[in-house]
Length: 58
Image (cartoon, rainbow, N blue to C red; front, top):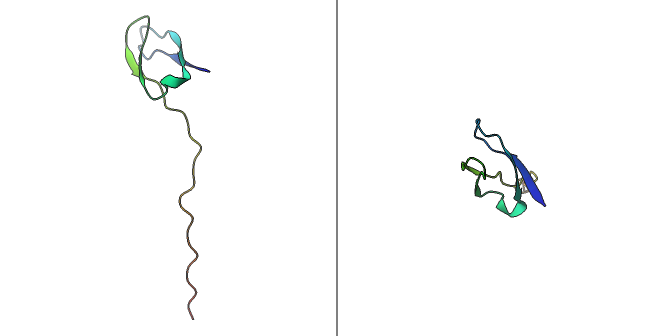
């Protein structure tokens, strides 16, 4: 699968398609040569560690 991006250079704004394996890495726009980061994949929100029940007082 590929990722579709827009070059962040305001004078370029070329639409780029990069492989999914480039997520979280730097790529270079083939038109203007600007380097930028491909966003990392979104991970589902994970819950924190389960809380232990409070001890009962006698």
